[in-house]
Image (tube, rainbow, N blue to C red):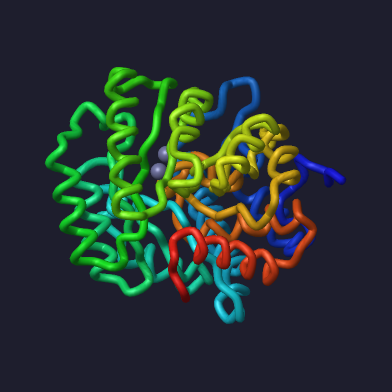
Length: 336
Ligand SMILES: [Zn+2]
Ligand SMILES: [Zn+2]
């Protein structure tokens, strides 16, 4: 049965906090209550307005912080944990507070992270991050956007990293992106195939990125059916696409987009997917869950997606953690 979709993600788990969080996030100070406000005069040219607005926004900001931290605090002593199977912690946007973001992730129960490369530099940085932090794993690869910068020598470099570092567990993200076509289509296909061949040789799973290119992606993967394994990260398809992914023996990476109100098709598809094929991901700093849209995504926000998914499948958070962690372990051959 398909459960009710499009509902608030966390109603069962923490209704009061979420209601107040939502209202705090969307609330703006009531101008009518402000000192010196004159209706019909488009507000007022009074310095008191600025002071008043600043105070109101500051108190809203503080209450937001309190609500978010009180919401997350319940996960700090939980007996189970989650894994973020797709994140870009090496990006510049995390330069000022990377340590803090990682610390918060761990404290909030997102205890293992797979950092995913998209070009040479980010793959090198993924490799380095996984050497620095015990609980961070790495994936190396050229994203279709960056396919135009790919050279064969990069695979030799990747091979060296892999020999040197057991925590490089995947090749990716690789694939096709016809939505933006930042590399010519032919180049994307060529570089995708070269990286698939490489993953086959070194026997590592692949992390697929596809956008508006699903059927071409599947056509290529079918040539390697049974010889490669992997995940369609940020899966966004319908039932026909789900069937192809399952037939290929691949997994589905599910992230914050499942919580978006307009994403009914994805919810209706995911609920029909075998849960043994689902991995959780943030794709941070991109695609935050609904409550944080417009903000930088962070690994700790994986909890929101997890809660949403647990509700969708009508299972406990413990069960979801147990299943998705096992899926992650099986695909990437990691034992926790
Ligand atoms: Zn991607
Ligand atoms: Zn990504």
